[in-house]
Length: 59
Image 1: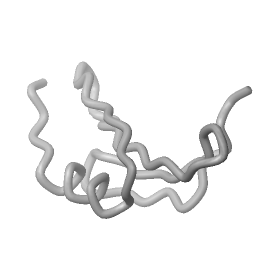
Image 2: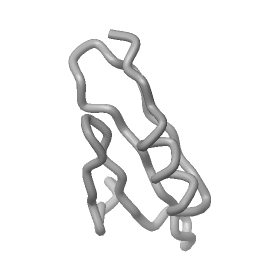
Image 3: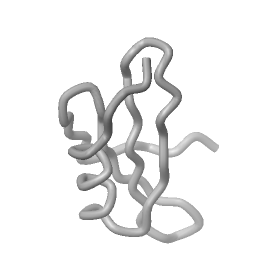
């Protein structure tokens, strides 16, 4: 089953979203720039937003 993303926000090229996984809130940060493979899952929204703000694309 695909997760239903909610509360999606954009920080530059990085999008942060929240979703439910196994009954727990999880948070995802994903870079949308071409050829950038950054994506990470976090327990807290604050950590995901910090990762989004400090991310520097390698591409």
